[in-house]
Amino acid sequence: MRRVFRPSWENLAAVVRGEDQVLLERAEARAWSLALESRRVPHRLRQQGRGWIVEAPAWYAERAAREITLFLGENRHQPRTPEPPRPQRSDGPTWAAMTGLLLFFVFVSRPWPGLGLYPQHWLDLGQAQAQLLLDGQWWRAATALTLHADAAHVAANAIIGGIFAGLLCRELGSGLGWFLILASGVLGNVLNALVQNPAHGSIGFSTAVFGAAGILSGLRAVGRGLNFRGFAVPVAAGLGLLAMLGSAGENTDLGAHLMGFAAGLILGLGAGLGLERLGPPSAALGRGLGLLALALLPAAWIWAWLA
Image (cartoon, rainbow, N blue to C red; front, side, top):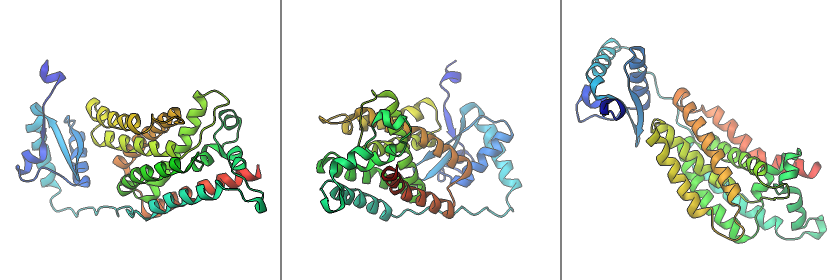
């Protein structure tokens, strides 16, 4: 029974190639997995660092290694499919986004009598007030991400958000990374409005910051195979970050942070599964998603002023 409920797993690359070569490239690991699936051999695919591992239960390892050896022999002379181009991994867009967040705070936190603009006006138009958001003023889910109570609030979000966004964009590319970050912030504000009282108002980029933490947790969970341990470890780490960074302070909106993390986790799981099946997005798709992310907040504010 112990073999059934707690099986030991063997790295097939170590069995097939020897101990000196135990990590595979993504495309090769996927090909091995497909070969084993076609022969109905139990196995799992896991990411480890920059490489990939194909494992089989110990009592299936010999059969799995034999199937892999036959597969390699049959495909020895076939040309290797080139890896798709890697997504853009520059930190420039993240620096620009965090700088823009700080400059926007400077602009909206001071009065401009000549333009008829005052801080309270921005807050009235853009905060994610639950009742108004759910009544159809959808733009508030986005505009609220750009509003902050004070300089300390926006500085903390810019620093912590820059770290999480940088990590995510280095992994997914700036286009897909920032699209998911803003989507998690918007979705988090909507979910928060659903669970709060109608008069509750939420502001701050921290919803998207914890959304980024949730996305990273979801990606790690997929990379570990989505078994219980593989899912629980990264999610527990993300919740630990939420407890340390997102639950202290007099004006902390814990609900927004929690909903942002939950939204990010859902998006991260979806993105991870999509990347497993389809590979990284093309350069054109990455640019398109980046442009959508770039246009989202200005478009939401334009809508708020015109509504």
